[in-house]
Image (cartoon, rainbow, N blue to C red; front, side, top):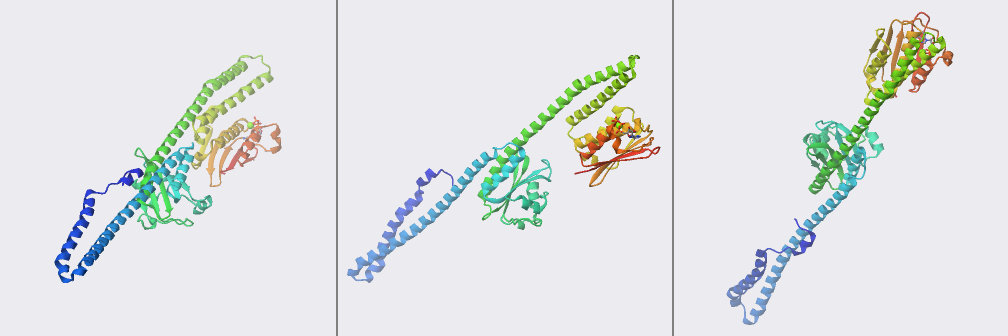
Amino acid sequence: MAGSPRQRHNIPLPWSWRLTATLLPMVGVVLTVLFFQVYIAPQISKGWRYPFLTAMLLVGTGLFSWVVFGILSQQQSAILSANQRLEKQRDGLNALREASYAMTTVGVWTDIVQNVVDVATRLTGARYAALAVLEDNDSFTIHQFFTSGLSQDQIDKIGHYPTGEGLLGEVIRHRRPIRLQRLQDHPASIGFPPNHPKMENFLGVPLLYQAQVMGHLYLTEKEGGFTADDQAIVELFARQAAAVIATAKFYQEREVFATLKERERIGRDLHDGVLQTLYGITLSLDNLVDSHDNLDQETATELTRVSETLSLLMTEIRFFIQSLESSAIDLRIALTDMLRRLGPTDDISMTFYDERYLELHPERIHDLLLSIQETVSNARIHGHAKRIFIEWTSTDEYYQVKVQDDGVGFVYHPDTTHTHFGIRNMTKRIERWKGSVRIASQPHQGTTVTLTIPWL
Ligand SMILES: Nc1ncnc2c1ncn2[C@@H]1O[C@H](COP(=O)(O)OP(=O)(O)OP(=O)(O)O)[C@@H](O)[C@H]1O
Ligand SMILES: [Mg+2]
């Protein structure tokens, strides 16, 4: 049923119809008159012939009109329902146009995807909609799940988002639409988890952009179920949505790339500029101390202290550069790096009992590194330790770094810390993460410093 609304008044009836409609009554009249002449007229008296023929003709034309109008009204209701369908399609297309516009009005990728889901419910009249984003184009596992029509409370009660099994996975695996009056009847359906709202009719379509899957859109609970026309509109919508999502993703990736480049640049500048300058200054200071024998002891000590402070500062800057360049920092690698910069590390053994240190946030790693550095230099300087053992362990609740030395040990008084800053600062760093520092030491029995920090 193509054609614009203006043309619909002028649809010409086929010629065969016109001819039939014109000839049929004529033939009818001729046949009736003939029939009358041959069979009826001889049987009745002359006075009755004329009224009888008239009656026959009247009944004949009446019957004819009745049949013709029957056919016409049938045609008309067919046209009317085709018209209604057309109007619905037009409404759908209008809604689609508005939806496409609404889809492009926000910026952040996740907002855009959420918006697509919300617009999809409005477009179709579905009560619920969801959009699944996969881990990558070839994967069948749902990575992110955006919903519309469900309250946060309902989502919390269900407990977890679908993983991509059952019916949703069916759309994912076959990359083609599925439309059902009762999703429970589909062989792939595996039912709902407890506390899931009732959902029966279903329409799932993949969001494809240049043969790439941008996600999958699922709609449920449309009053009366989804029609083939709904599916056609949703498929059109899905194409536009896929393009919108692809564009948003592209821009986000570019932004991330630009940020990474910028961080890399800052890191390079710090390394080549600030670090090299600091390095030059420490060299000059060390030279000064070494080559001037006539420096008094106090000045020499002070200069050495400044040089050491600068070295520490350089370590901090190095760490900062490293954190700029990689979003994930590996504690083990960072620790090895840092200890090497302090000097030879033959006296140190490191044991990591599990790999959960890979989940540490860079800021926690920063504080851990500096605390370990302080403990190691205390063990060397004050304890004269020959061996230092560093151990990492963790449980579900906390992680722990133990630094044990075989040095001279000491009697620890927490109140002596106003003249010594190492242990005090370390404690502050660890307490920042709600953790604790435990120092176990006895003269001549070595020292064990234990840092314990909860994960959360
Ligand atoms: N592993 C250790 N073995 C022996 N003594 C230690 C050890 N760790 C710390 N101490 C003793 O505890 C004191 C306090 O240590 P802390 O690190 O707080 O200060 P510091 O090292 O003296 O000075 P700063 O760290 O501020 O440069 C040290 O002076 C030292 O006497
Ligand atoms: Mg110290």
